[in-house]
Length: 79
Image 1 (cartoon, rainbow, N blue to C red):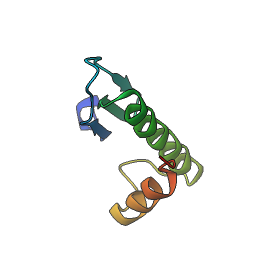
Image 2: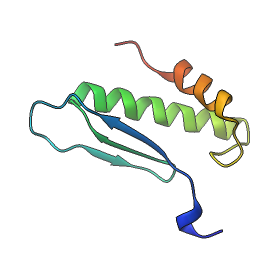
Image 3: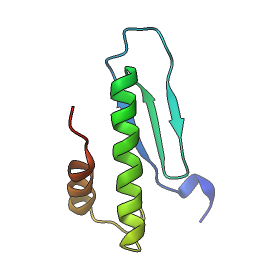
Image 4: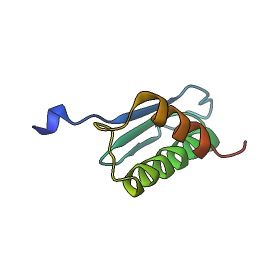
């Protein structure tokens, strides 16, 4: 399977009012936009979720939608 076939998780922050353009990219996720706080929360959530998947010997190709949703909710930091 080629690089173009690799799934990624994408987070999009829509609350940016300070004019900064934020982009965080990793092998398995991309976080774009958002305020500093929102962007940080989205990035932290994605990182922890990918760590959890790795500890379960899974990736975005092998995880079920419900399991991924549950992990994302579990890893969402408090506001």
